[in-house]
Image (tube, rainbow, N blue to C red; front, side):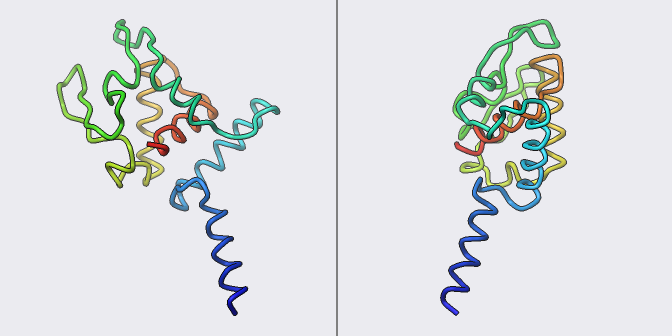
Length: 138
């Protein structure tokens, strides 16, 4: 019985190795499949690449230089602020805001909107996964 419990525990840990809830892990797996289709050399998402994407500055859709950190700040455990509306943005890091990265539809909506705001295009599957791994690491 102990071996069975240990085996089941290890199985659950390996399924949720990224620390995402099951619906988010399914979304991550979909992004991995898409990333692999786009690049056969793809192996996994990377938080370091995600950090570069998050911090890199671009001329955004409003014609000004922005990055993801422009709104969310470089410290993802702190609140951010929308520079256009001046509305406060709750911390992006799940360690500071446990509701982050829990709802797939919400994550998809904001990834699409924010990539369009900063990059003037929708992010690739690899970019999205890298950014999600970076956010999750904080």
